[in-house]
Length: 164
Image 1 (cartoon, one colour):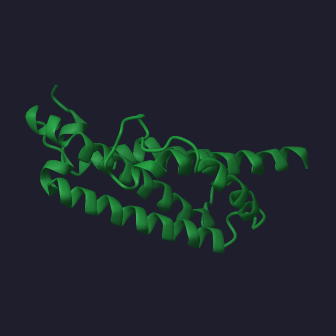
Image 2 (spheres, rainbow, N blue to C red):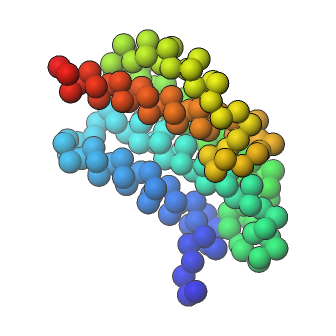
């Protein structure tokens, strides 16, 4: 194939983040408000979480990609360097998410919903990553749980908005 984004280091990560998170969130938000002021921290958070997901996948597929001769970001940084970069992105993403919450991007009552939801989702899908594969990564367990909790909180918020 003449152009394969998956085979271009750094560009594989940028294209994944733009096409599968950042541009989707911005376009959906900008339909209602063309000036995303307080949402930028949330956009950064979602983008970095997406980047972590892509790096996680590259670490998981590292040996197979190396055997296939695929040159991606993980082949440039090495397996442990890619894993460390993914964790760093996740920490920054969580910091941006917390800052967006504190800046008022979300109603504070959603914290109560989160307190109810977290113990419930902690019982779901233990020892599996997003694809359902067993993983040695200590954060893999939380991938499904995090997305499930986030979606349940957002559904609760949508429900309250629709009712009111």
